[in-house]
Length: 110
Length: 286
Image 1 (cartoon, rainbow over the protein chains, first blue to last red):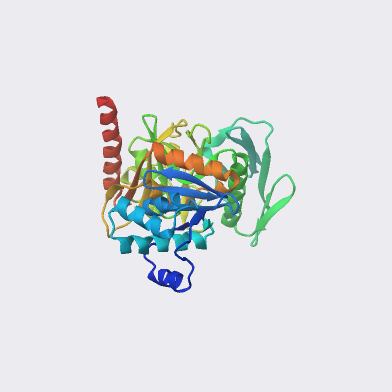
Image 2: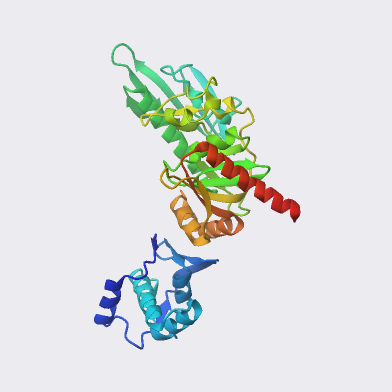
């Protein structure tokens, strides 16, 4: 069981530096994930690993856009609009969240 | 030797021992489950096989010796643990939650939290305030309808906890077997004969925390925070998989969820009374 940890700047910097999220990266939710929505987030159940995750509303929003079509930049733009964030703030949050989701194999390349 | 039978939701078991095992009444473990004599699904026997200065106590099931020791308290802890595992295995079709369950006017309150969070203390507190009880430790959630079923056993409470309640002075409370952590087994029927609640639909999910520095408060929390804590306290989630998550999501959506910070049982009791009262008033208006 894990929770998202937004604002992990070291992870964010590493992600950019290591080129893990190039501009055309389009994350896609893993097919083994079952999502149950809540009022302020969601629960994810990984049917392959049997692991359970809870995501807050921002991470849940991001996951909705992990459809294999949207780039990280597009997701950040949508997030900035939805939550009233500055673009650079939204981008930082989104990279942190996607880095976490990737690490747990909840999303992968589209 | 005396044989007593017990039953929980169709699962019958028998405990056989000397009438008073090393001064500890064996039936202090599950007094509310006592049932009539007859065949059982499981049988356990405790007996002293060697007397004198170094007695030896033996716990057996139908297959043979389960545990032997010179310490009667250790043997009873082992017996209690063995019976608990058998009961949980027999009720594995329910989602099992590490929670105390209380009922007031057909509305269920689940106090969910790890050991030491104050579940038993608040369960005792509310029992003394007129609520009925499903359990002080484990409740059984019906996967289909989300009704919560009782798992009634003796309360486990430290002497310091019992001293918080002046109402218990003079009652035959806390005289049952005390385990190695100093927790006594208290038969709640000394407080109220009909203490075991009927299955109820949960209305409130409360996550207690003993917090002398913060003061006493009942604060609403979000569904995500609530389900995170529920997942951590679900005993058999693995065997339910995705279906178990669905049950928990339904539970969270149908309940009002709160964090209880408390350091004083009387103030906590007042907060719970207010909670139940507010709900009643809202329903009366509706």
